[in-house]
Amino acid sequence: MTEILIEESGMRFGPFDTDDCFVIEKSALYQRIRQGVKIAEMAVLRKARSRPAVWIIEAKSSSPRPVDTDASRRFVGEVREKLDNALKFTLAGCLGRHGATRDLLPENFVSLNLMTIDFRLVLVINGHQADWCAPVQDALRKALLPLVKTLELSPNSVAVINDDGARKWGLISGPGDIDESTQID
Image (cartoon, rainbow, N blue to C red; front, side, top):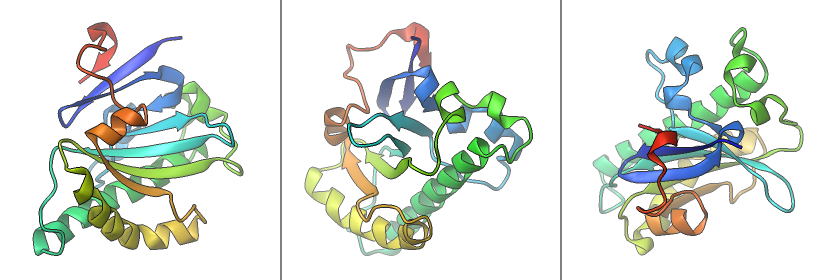
């Protein structure tokens, strides 16, 4: 098993099995269509006890405060666009919509059963205070409601967490956990 670490917004995501992690921003598949298409950093296949889920992850180094300002509405709008595009792009790749793209996806994405897979849309904000996450999450859930409804995702499929939460969920590594030979910058 080969593992990968991804450096993004001052955090080190992973390690993830390379067959379970689609680094969207760096992929040859995304490079083909990137002009005018904002997208989240990665999609990670997480194997849960109940059923597997693809976590679409956007990482940020900061977020505007307070929440109800023009800057915060622009921030939430940008994150919504990236998560929405990344989910649809991942689905399109799994469906082979971009030509020979299935060859460009990680192995375990090629064999996903799209009928039974869950999806999570996760924003990770580095250094964000835990009590600041809830208002951003509420705004992001509201912005992503059309996508959540049309794909019949769980009402809890949208999450906003800080780096501590990401560490608890096993999304990021501590500073001493890095093998530089498998890192993608």
